[in-house]
Image (cartoon, rainbow, N blue to C red; front, top):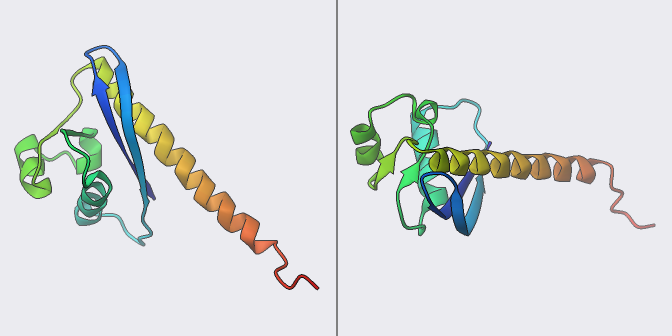
Length: 115
């Protein structure tokens, strides 16, 4: 799994500017709230602003509970711009995951003996 954090200025209708993108991979046999929260916290560390995620990503918890768990401002998307930012983060994390998977595939067929 790969988590993407996007730091951006968002208007109600679209993404105005992207400041920073961060990716953090995680390998886990099972997925639970603790793993997701730790991954989101680590990925968004040192990025200022409000964390926005889909409700299902945080196991449908109330916003105040997620605020408390993360220790920072959190909200679910309300505008088209916020939904676009989440969609962008999903595309980035999916692309990052594919790069990691294909990088591992490339290593399997490489002969490192150079003889």
